[in-house]
Amino acid sequence: MSKNVLVVAERRDGVLRNVSLEVLSAARKIANGGTVTAVVFGKGPGGEAQQLARHGADRVYVVTNEELNAYSTDAYSQAFMEVFSIVEPDAVLIGHTATGRDLAPRVAARLNAGLISDCTGLEVNGDDVVFIRPVYAGKLFQKKRVKEGIIFATIRPNNLPVSEPDTGRNAEVTEVRAQIADIRTVIKEVVKKTAGKVDLTEAKIIVSGGRGVKSAEGFKPLYELAEVLGAAVGASRAACDAGYCDYSMQVGQTGKVVTPDLYIACGISGAVQHLAGMSNSKIIVAINKDPDAPIFKVADYGIVGDLFEVVPLLTEEFKKVLV
Amino acid sequence: MKILVLLKQTFDTEEQIELFDGEVNENGVKYIINPYDEYALEEAVAVKEKYGGEVTAVTVGPDRAESALRHALAVGVDRAIIVNDESLFGDEYTISKVLAAVAKQDSYDLIFCGHMAVDDGAAQVGPRLAEELGIPHITTITNFEIEDGKVKVEKDVEGDVEVIEADMPVLVTAQQGLNEPRYPSLPGIMKAKKKTIERLEAEDLDIDIEEIAPKTEIVGQYLPERKKAGKVLKGDIGEQVFELVELLRNEAKVII
Image (tube, rainbow over all chains, first blue to last red; front, side):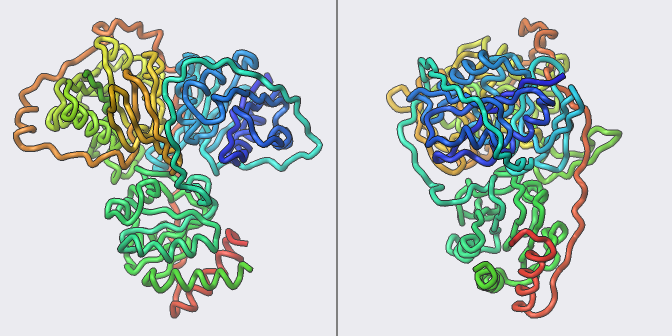
């Protein structure tokens, strides 16, 4: 039987996030010939309805209210419930992002529904939908399904393919003016720290530093390499604990779990808890002075050497070829 | 002020996972308090020390999870509750219903928990519990203060920071960077040994087991394919760097 699937699409800094397109491809599989409805909250620069249509949405709801221009749990959950009652979906999908992690469990509880979070894959066999999700930060994988009620899942960025845009597709767009009352958490201030930076969990390339970076200053060559590659910069727990960088950069079982196309580990020995956070990257490069460092066991390519010598050379070499 | 902190005992993050007959092998495994819950615990105790009040720690889990509660008592928690009734174990839907029943036995002004557990990584129980209790929640906080009776937190939003205010009661989930969890003192450990841990079962909580039956099920588990060690390059550093760039472009094709 075909299914009616609702996708919560998300913008960041006014731009539709890539993960929302990845979620749409999952939604099309689950719909199995049914309808895929995408919803975006708040006023955007426009054009996203068409983008959502080209990537698989049959219908798009744009829910507006001044309170939806910035995320708050109360405003978004009220707006979500309003769309939910219009669409009456059999399945709901959201990206496993800051918004998805905050909103999905809240509304799942309101709906008395199960929720399978942080999925990296799915298997659809007619009516049967099984989600694949890493546990223990990727040391183990679980297959999980919903036993009763609606199918509800959050999808980890960077893991599902985005379907090729079909420029012939159009979606029916409906604007809904939401009723929002009683917001109990008030945003007083937003400090943008990521402006111009690539988000770790969505980055295609990550340059990461460990204890071997030796100081906050030692991250400089890593940032230079990252700039040439359009990469994000990450760190191991050892580097964060030593105060070389902010905890928001930590990759590992505590910290962020990442799956970029390319992970360049500089001066990282490869503790089990760090490997859990990055070993599902497509290609891993290790640069370390110690030839016995465990990181070389998971690396596709390794250079045994001093990162302060290797990384600047690498930056120069990439500059040459990436003009 | 009444404070509740939710704790989960998890595998130490340095543990490797092995499957035995399709189940995760728990033999010889070292257990810790979920690191994010440790931040929650530290903050709960610090808030009590600064503003006064009473802290209750609760865990839903088997008897071994008592050691997490002993630790909590040793660092300054006043009351500890374990729900060790297996008929109440289940998925995030089930656990949050159980925790809601526990929380409703008292009236808490503040609830602290980790933003996720490092084992199943679901990041659901905090927001779900807040919804069950009809109170607001704020996830992934990196700073916590009380000003003029209001809670004022810094929330990590994928690297950006939001300063958020809310009235109590409120539930907050701890992100890394919130604080430095303390170690228990020897007198603290000695005192904790003498304290009673309250044990609750379905009957005590007036829970209808069928109503809280899990909504999801695990249908399989598997270990990821072990990554094979790749090439360690040879030659002088300049040559190795040149070769690496070649390999990334032409063999791995991750850089175009």
